[in-house]
Image 1 (tube, one colour):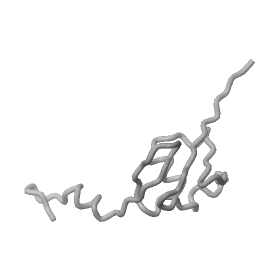
Image 2 (image 1 turned 120 degrees about the vertical axis):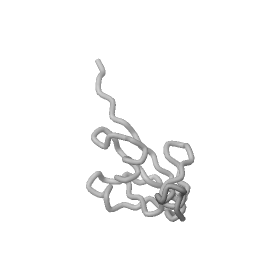
Image 3 (image 1 turned 45 degrees about the horizontal axis):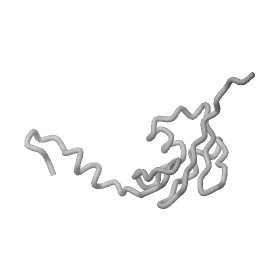
Image 4 (image 1 turned 180 degrees about the vertical axis):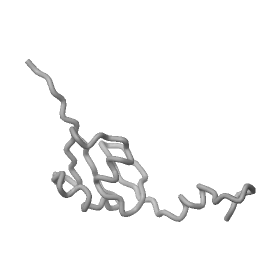
Length: 86
């Protein structure tokens, strides 16, 4: 499908990618199917340098983020490290 300008519609492009529902920090979010943990962090604009990630109550090692796929219905927790203290 093409728009009147001859460019492919972004709506059509996004309709071709299946979206799945996951829960991130208690809130439902729709993301592309096949998304990795690393891709999810990019999708939600989180700097991966200072976070830990848990998927379905299991901590995912940073070395495994690129190879760990987030599946439909996954419960994801992203925890930020905060410096400071007395």
